[in-house]
Amino acid sequence: MSTVHLSTRQPGALALFWSRARRNKGTAIGLVLVLVMVASAILAPWIAPHDPLEQDIIARLEPPSDTYLLGTDPYGRDILSRILWGGRVSLFVSTSAVLIAMVVGSAIGILAGYIGGKFDRVTMACMDVLLSFPSLIMGLLVVAMLGPSIVNLILAIGLTAVAPFARIARAPTLVIKEREFVEAGRAMGFSHGRIMGIHILPNVASEVMVMASLWLATAIRTEASLSFIGLGVRPPTPTWGSMIREGFENILDAPWLSIFPSIAILIVMLGLNLLGDGLRDATDPRLRHE
Amino acid sequence: MIGFILKRLLVALPTLLAVLTIVFLFVRVAPGDPAMVILGDSASQEALEALRQQLGLNKPLWAQYVDFMLMVLSGDLGKSMLTSRPILQEVAEVLPYTVELTVASLTIGVVVGVPLGIVSAKQRNGWFDYFARVISLVGLSFPAFVSAVLMLLIFAIELRWFPVISSAALDDPEARLRALALPAFNLGLIMLAYVTRVTRSSMLGVMSEDYIRTARAKGVPGRMVVWRHALRNALIPVVTVVGLYLGVLIGNSVLTEIVFNRPGLGKLIVGALNQRDYTMLQGLMVIYAFIIVLCNLLTDMTYGLIDPRVKRQ
Image (cartoon, rainbow over all chains, first blue to last red; front, side, top):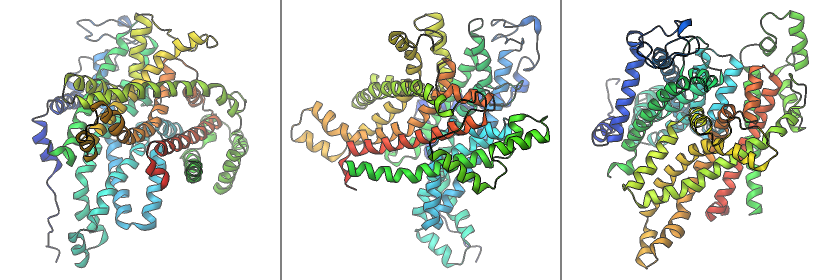
């Protein structure tokens, strides 16, 4: 009996996305920007011209030059190298946070939708309350209580994104659990776990993935904001938020200190937003036939 | 309308209770000993014990929960551990600044964003539409503190149009307005981006409805169709978004207040974080909980104003 396979996949959002991305200039630009950022973050150890932590007391607060392409900070550290390494931290923290939120949130959403009844109502009411908290305030609270470390930062940012994932996973589950193939699975004696994991999850996955791409931008923003406030990864590890903070403190003498990491964040956010819009348009049935 | 408001208030109470419970759980159940966090690793056992006693951390969790709820109900949030002044008093002193900033940026966002979205939808794929979409994309992409730092750099330091530090001379109305301008514009840009976007897509949706075609067919002038027939229906999702992003606005006001050195809840919260002012943090979270529930309530009521169907439910 276990060899029976029920084909439950609908035409993938990804395929639609590719066909649209080739036509839509914005999505293509977004994709390129995001890929450049990911590549530079991964390749930071090889392409960074200097050690991001190496201090050069003689070259403090130097404006951009041939040796230091984007100048140096108050400790004489190379800004370009710190931006490249900082991207690694931002990307790692936000991707991990979104992955955790995606797994936990989808599990909650599918369970709530599948079980239904009182469990569904109570769970979703909790999610609504969680959702009503501004993510920055919640992140602030959690990191303040747990103490700033990479793991706590990931947990805090992840927690702020659980509720939206639960919501987005629950809605299609409600529809799918009534479909014939789920009923067939039940009739054949499949366990609830198997039905949820093998038959419902793949149908929910595409919407969850789109949500993930949109939340990645939010996660990066929250991470940078927390670092800016001083609740991010501890110095001397470079992060974009803490670099802008340092630049802000020296804004009158060395404006480039805050300008360059700001541009880095801006490029990433633009890229992710353009890409997220493209993904969303590809999955929005109202826009498919435009 | 009064019955509707009362009903909404009744619904808001359990939400408030739930939010307060979450605050309590966050503060108490978080791993790590608050007494240790406040006093540091090197504190003596006696000092830790005394502080736990003082904060009521020795009691069982349910007793702490009852204490907490009673405290909130009685309207007394305790004293700041740092300044030993009542927390409510400290909050009341700075709250007007945060409210002023939030309301000003909300106004900028709605007053500029809604017309921008409407025109953008009317001239779909024209040059104005592209312009409005680029503006809203930029607004969505800037983290609040990044745009704040850049604005400070350009308009306050380079061009000297506005004061660098916003808190000076707050008794003078003109100076106060000048001090408010940059922070409000900074936050307003974020709101504007969301509002423009939603108004545009909502208008596009409504304009293809049957009743719009009917209105056009019976000869209603184009301007009337847009402003009377379409807009009122298109505004419903806009209100949802404004309500939803009021939270984002409150979060981002923290960052804006820090950059522009404005008094407000944001500076209070960061000060409390840096000084490990545990009671102040808890009090501020309660205040935020109230603000969030209040925002949701206001959003619900606006629905009632715009959409007669909501009231009848």
